Length: 189
View (spheres, rainbow, N blue to C red):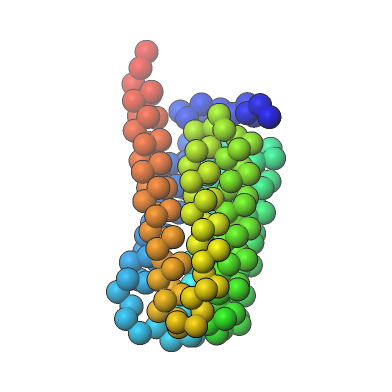
């Protein structure tokens, strides 16, 4: 399929900030999972749910600033964002190790599939490769998460937090690269 026609990086105001916000949420959650030695099931549900919901809400912002809101890639990403918001609400409402593993796996799996699909559909887009990578990380996290439910909240948060750190670094680099490219392009004649 041909890549969809998309605006240049310089004409997407707010994109880099949206990516940095998504990265900051992921990195903050990842850091929390590293330093939180003995999380409870309730704490896991609240922290994980907040991360899932924040990821979804911030992905809606990315879709609106990336210039893909009306096309197929944007619709897929919006579906992934909706799944993450739903997973966030469910993780807070229904607490327990097995439930967190299932809810997280479903939310991250839908997000991963949406990002991979968007990356394929919008392969000419500035974020096309990043969506592919982020989608693979989300799918990988979703695939292994259920195998850790017997190890408790710390292990479950560690698995989700590990994926969050990887995607956080990816989106931070992407956002800062877009900012640099936009600033470099703005100064050209």
